[in-house]
Every structure is written in C-alpha cells, then in structure tokens.
Image (cartoon, rainbow, N blue to C red; front, side, top):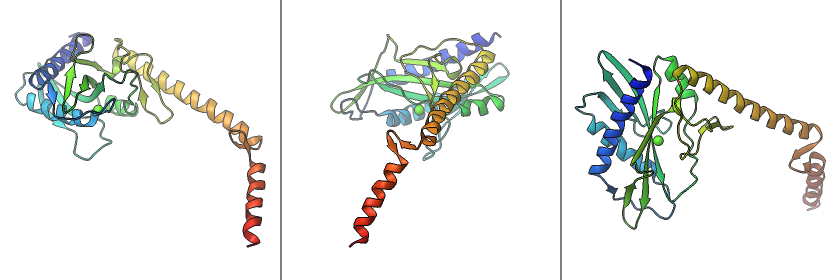
Length: 239
Ligand SMILES: [Ca+2]
C-alpha cells in the first residue's frame, strides 16, 4: 500500500470519529469568558469520548487517554490503527481553538518526542483541531472553513513552523499543512532544529559581546551597578 494512502485512510477515519463526537455533543456546559481558552477541559472531554467511540471500532483498538495528572505526557490519547495484519501506533494531540482569538500560536510540544517515537519504530502524531466559541453558559463547537475538525500529522506540519528557544514547536494554527514523505519530514525536522540553534547561537553571541564590553543588561553597565551598590551600602553603613 502506498504510504500516502495509508496516512489518508487514518486521517479519514479519525475525522469520522471526531465529527461523530461533535454531532452527538454540539455544545459543552463550560462557560467561556471573552477570548478565554478552555483547551484543557475540551481536550479531556475529547480524550474520553475518543476512547469510548473506539471501544468496538473496525480500525482503532486499545485507545487510552493520557495518564491523569501527567501534564508533560507526550500525547492526549494513544490508539492503534489496525489494517490487515499491521498495527500502527497513533499519538493524538487535541488542539481546541477559540475562534475569537484570531492569531493563536499554540506551542505544540517539543520536537524531540517525535524523534523518540520514530526511533522506536513509529511515526504518527496526529494533531486534531476543533473550534469553539463561548456563550453565557455553554461552549459551542463551530465550523472553520466548513469543517468541524481539521486533522493532520505532525510530519505534514506547515513549513512556517519554528522551534522556539524553549525547544517547542510553534505554528499558527491557521497555517495549512503540506504533504511530505516520511523521509522528507526527518530532513525537514533536522533543518528546523539547525535553524533554531543558529538563532540561539546568534543571540547568545550578541549577548556575550555585550558583556565582554561591560554591559550587563540592555544599556546598563557592570560599573554602573557597582557604583549604585556602593552608594546604597554607604547609606546603610552610616546607620
Ligand atoms: Ca493537546
């Protein structure tokens, strides 16, 4: 089977499940103040529903939610996609977007978790986006570009993604994914890491040069700090 078709099948099946969950639960009893993010509560809801919906599923088996209280867990849900005699581990990361917040750049986790995943013989981390808006007492799932959910694999993430100095993948959720092969993704990820290190190095180099010139922070020099300190010490010493 072509890898691309295999991936397309998984995305299609995931989409059906999420659309089904939203059709059954068009709103949630969660209050959303203007612009407030309710991502965690929505994610918890979707995790549980996903596990329920895949209890007796043709393709998905052994779904489970992330362990409670483990905030740094690499996935929200884990499941296995079974096709013919093959069982493929899928990690799911739910992303709930309040459509009132136009420019949302959610951190999408460390890139290193996908590296460990690939190193262990897997590949697929699926981002599942859902969209919501708040009213007084409830939260409504809404469509964006005529879709209740947008799902893609991390391997197909927008080329505009960057790796932040805190080693987090960051991308504007509105940026569409692009298809790339698995091999292309590995090379792409290495390139993004390289660019991130280069930006950090450039910044550190600049800061190092400043401190070598005696500037400790912004325009403040070490000498100025020492002088100010001496003045303050004198005031205390004559008490
Ligand atoms: Ca998440």
